[in-house]
Image 1: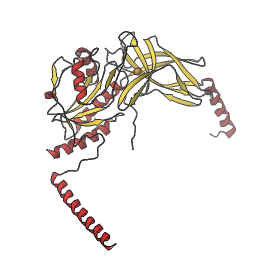
Image 2: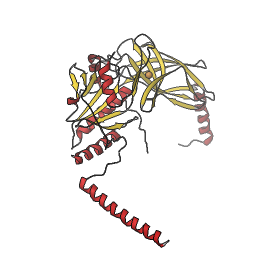
Image 3: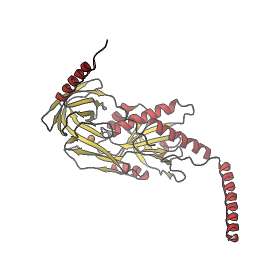
Image 4: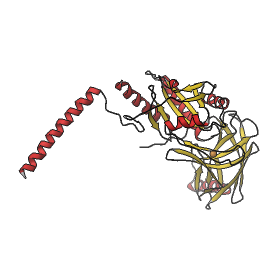
Amino acid sequence: MLLTALFVIVCVALGAGVGIYTSRDYTASNAVKPAVEGFLWPNPRIIQPFSVVDQHGNPFGLENLTGQWSFMFFGFTHCPDICPITLSLLSQVQKKLAEQDTADKVQIIFVSVDPKRDTPEQVADYVSYFSKNLIGLTGTEEQIAGLARQIGVVYIVNDETAPGDYSVDHSASVFLISPAGQWLGLFSAPHEVDDIINRFNTISEYIKKQE
Amino acid sequence: MRYSSGFLFFILIAVQSVFAQNSIEITDVWINEAPPTVKILAGYFTINNHSDDPVDLVTAHSPSFQKIEFHLTETQDGVARMQKLETISIPAQSDFSFSPGEYHLMLFNPVKTTKAGEMISLQLTFSNGTNIDVEAEVKRSELPPHHHHH
Ligand SMILES: [Cu+2]
């Protein structure tokens, strides 16, 4: 009985010691991982080189992601409901972030999961409607599939309901890529401007402390 | 000025009987403007069924579009999918809303480019034989209503 009690005391003392040790350790690395829904730290996926084309027909690859934060949304231009809502929302996110004092460089990217219909011209008309600053990406079916696979984006092209009429099921999430080309955040729908901004600010603050 | 409670009661009955005649009301109707090259638009509205009977919305027509369908966007495991619905059932004494990211009118192939500010005629037909004509204003994309996840 006494021995058990002694054992417990020793364990608690050791536990406290470990606690002090780890808390010192955290102070040294300067931050505890913030509890942000969809924050993929400490296991972000490093984006591998890829190649697609932008709305002007210019090549777009990993080098166009590095050096700034990217919010990516995968959709298609024949999508009248959630794609326009999400792109309007992301345009607002970009506008609000630009007004912040600690303005990180941020780009908003729409990736077409319907490259058969979404030519660069079609994508150009589509994205420019929402904001001059939006980037629109398309490519061959293989190129788009390759990029989508890297970020775990799911999409399914459905059968035609009438000649040329078909719908594409696609991820409703917004994906955050860091300036180092790491997939760091997964924001699931339904989206809210302020919620996305708060989560982004917390994540980018934390990442800066890691550097 | 003072009215007797009897007079107020009379007014109340009169107002109610007007509603009884218009047992189905369509409110907050609008169409989301789309980039000019897009040939599919989405429309939204609320159906107020003031009657004591359930009713189905069975068809929608517009001289401005080749075809109109009822759709529901459903997000499962993060993947959004549009599902076509044949009819929309509205229970007795209740409202049913079409709103961004959920139920929407899927408007196919506009006869001409539709711009914000324009009014589009829609005719909605219900299972009880009621036809309702509404004018839908084309508006620039609105954000979805706030969803709180506390
Ligand atoms: Cu639809």
